[in-house]
Image (cartoon, rainbow, N blue to C red):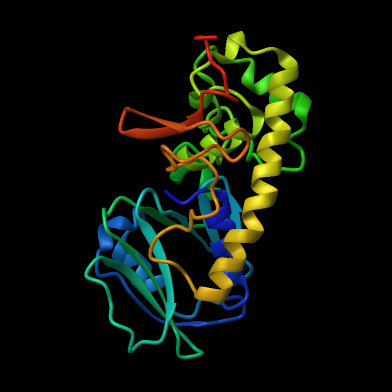
Amino acid sequence: MPEIPDLEGYRSYLNARLPGQRVETAEAPIPWLIRTGGDEFVKRMPGQVFEPIERVAKLLIFPFESGDRFVVHAMLAGRFQYVEPKHRRRSVTSWVLGLENGMEFRYFDQRRMGRMYLIRPEQFDEVVPRWTEMGPDVMDPQLTPEKWLELLKKSRAQIKSVITNERIVAGIGNAYSDEILWEAKLHPFRKRSDIPDEEIIGLFHAMRRVMEWSIPIVTREMEEKGLPPNHYRKHLRVHRKADDECPRCGHRISEITSGKKVTNFCRECQPGLER
């Protein structure tokens, strides 16, 4: 699933190319992924002019001069392409926008799980699932350490489950939660209720450090190599690094799979209840 660094990379890449471009043609080969209607998308998109793209949590929002908004939640396998029309289309291409500069903006989804909505601004609450239930975006400047502490106090669950719950704070997924917890030296399965407030505040600062470190790396990778078919993860220090040495203490990185999600951490510098 694309997480904040991936989405910020997409946003930067596309903001250098899409704003001011007019949509000339629209196709929806897999129309049902556009939850507000594939036919409506094909009818309404030609003539739209892109404005700068926005991100809220794991959503990319494409505003248009008309006031319309195209909201994309890529889920697990959704990917974007900005290519010449001669570029071969993937069989799972869900929609294609032909632009006035001769390029095509496409979306493909191997698992066909993505969700898209073409709406007016006043329709967010009504149409976009859980829009009103989401906690604050973790990169929102108004999210302070004190507010973070207040939000996390609402849960007694394991800390990894807490920070990946979008109803508490929005935007952290499986991969970057491992990195954030490693940075904070917190065991992913410690109960939130067992963690002192000062460590929760430390977790906030760890989260911001990880994001501020990762976003430029992923953004630069996309700008240099183009939009990726898979998410860039080579820079991560513990996620999917089972049996590698911990870059901080040299201990072996552990891996646990639970609920179809892989969790990686260092038992030495992220001690849990076994100590």
